[in-house]
Image 1 (cartoon, rainbow, N blue to C red):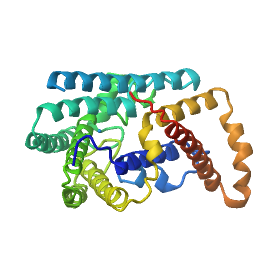
Image 2: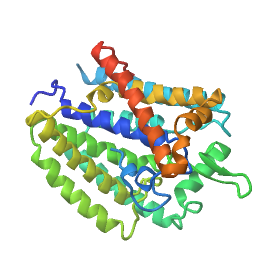
Image 3: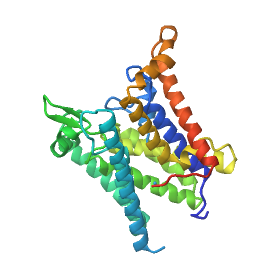
Image 4: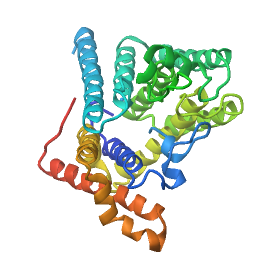
Length: 334
């Protein structure tokens, strides 16, 4: 299978992932969100926690430039949130910043390291992170080593910072970026198998990863915020299995590539939705919009249904936006 072929299944799966992110990130009422649409408070793993990326010198340059662009976009989005939403402090870390770092590191490894070396790195990172976190103390939200490192280096710029205790917590922090690189390496291997037509390995390795992740979670709990080694294996297994199913249904059996328009404009959808929320909150339009358009249902169906309805409407709006962009062949790249 040619590396130049763009698979509809991958675009569809990427797009559905972005749509799910918008659904999770934009409820009408954060106090009333159905449990499967929330991240685990600490240990555990909900559907929302599955995060489901010329010559060598030129390739290295292209990888690093794109990585820096992704990081820069993430920083700009947080500047917008800080400025328009009057947030407590500017947050230097976030989803896009982590994606950019992982993309850069793994992109260089894809160029310069053989698959065997990549697998050895995955194993070394997962085992090393487990040992480091076990040595660093309890895995509580305040006492774990990753949070202590973030507090020391970021202080009040951490995502959650308690001025009384002087402790902070950062879900996309510094130390937990190491196992996130391992996750990206798993994605690199899965993509290589898909391109070379070795798709059987997707479900076979997925089964092994799920089993190992479940067993490891007995000692090192599934925890997305810490990006624990067991979570890397569990979420990686789910992602590989989902990719295999999408490939079978969309590429081989020609099912509709639902979500493709989101997938080919993933950055536009994510950044555009983020900025839209910043504008609505900054202009104090979000709550009146929710109250008049959705919250009126609360006396009849309870508070959770209108909150979910708002999130679905938000996703539907952006689905229409990216569908129009796709029809007009307008694609935003970073």
